[in-house]
Image (cartoon, rainbow over all chains, first blue to last red; front, side, top):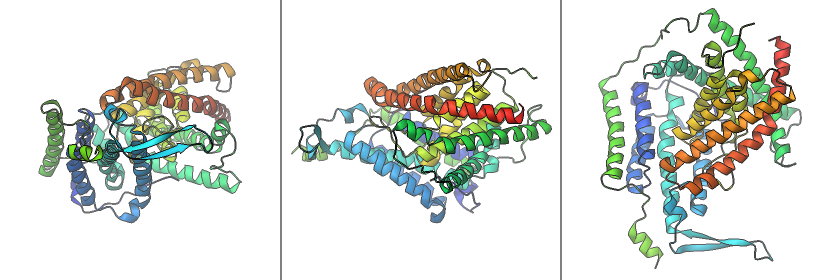
Length: 296
Length: 182
């Protein structure tokens, strides 16, 4: 199943923002979380609320994002969340080295044998799973509206005006334009192969057989795209692409609201740096009361 | 016939960098729900074979752009967000096989396919190692987790995918080229 999107102009404050300010804000939030390596839910929760607020301001219709959200919920809650809850993986070392008393234990043994292990769910892992979900959602919620609310025609100029070279900007612009087309080609190929009796989800055979079974999908789509690429190159060469500095049809300009928005992003970034490196706050945190309660 | 240059960055590189990125993003989306066992938040990606193929066929710039932009697209649309170190690692993973572009003369020749796989494996090793080690700073994991929990399963998964799917893509590409007369 592929998730594709539909850009639609909406009269919202988010769409009135300059695309550069949105990307700079996104970069500030991601770098604010990752550079000082913030795992403290006391810092992540307010950020999560801000990102939810911004998402709601984008006013994306539920029918447009329903499949995307389903996909994200499965990924974040069932894969990342459960992974964090059961194993503590994907987070700081302190979670992996958790020695707190288990809230409850689940024995997982092969019946009739002593092979297996006892799965211990601790308060540390519960908090880690919550923090991890919120941390990922904070970054994802900012990224999700972009394809729905940013005109695909302005990706190139946006990156160009952020200092990226003409050719790299145009590569990004083209990649965003090609993605829905190739996703649609892939979807059509899956349907066509299924009509011929192809079983993508068949569990028969080992890993090699299952990977080989992907060839009827990967090969036609990839090869068709290489042929398409030659046609695009010919068209661009005919228009003398790359022989002189490029001009872009759309012009971008910052408004006061953009400075406010970028200022907010910068403030989040600096706040997280200050909390981590000046006050030493930002490591993975569990309320002491919860720990004391769990340890009896 | 026009002589190929390894580090040329012209229309061909722009277009195939974009197509490679879009393909890598689209196929990654398809499998971004399949986590690797024993790893942190790492997914199984058959699309890596496409990335290596684009590097081998069109050079290091195409591999770098396809890996970096494609990973960013796939992750963002799947809801993972943006992780610069994994995007850069994917870029490296596509760029290193691109260094073999001029060594590949015949896409259906066994020796050339072996060379492509060898460079592809080198790219996977360096790219994934870069991402796994930088995860120590970004994600706060220790060296043991970086090597055992991230690098090893991701490397093995990508290695298997490359060894199986890259030859199929190269042979198909040879047929397409022959039919096009290029």
